[in-house]
Length: 188
Image 1 (cartoon, one colour):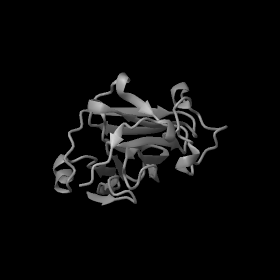
Image 2 (image 1 turned 30 degrees about the horizontal axis):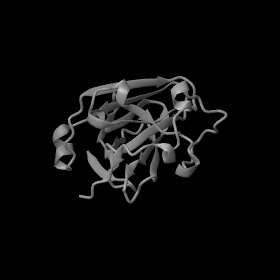
Image 3 (image 1 turned 90 degrees about the vertical axis):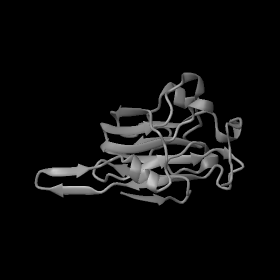
């Protein structure tokens, strides 16, 4: 398993080893000890699994606040997604910047999105399934989001606003500039 930083160093790519033969493949998708050896000591408490039937489904950009803020470890088990993490930590040198990449079921690469980042994705294929671990339980009172297509974020989404399939909740998310301070950057 390899751990590498992205353009935003706090967001990491977790690349498990994939062993293939005539029977199929085997992948160890999570190993707490290996991640701890890379300085990632996170206790995950909940696994989530989503199915998005149409291509062009956008989920996000989501995060939770306070004691329910979540680290997320995202992987695709069927189909593919355009995956995005946005730094929303006030005072961060990369505030408002994002990382975007494609995750697929064929490639076991995962994205580790830390607390202080909003996360979202757009499905690139029909019937895409995404699984992700989170470090805090879901809390409706702490669940928030920002607009997926906020022009200030300059995310090159693979779907137009007219073709994007969104929940009513995600259609109402505010732009980043309208968001109160929910996370503060702390230099290490």
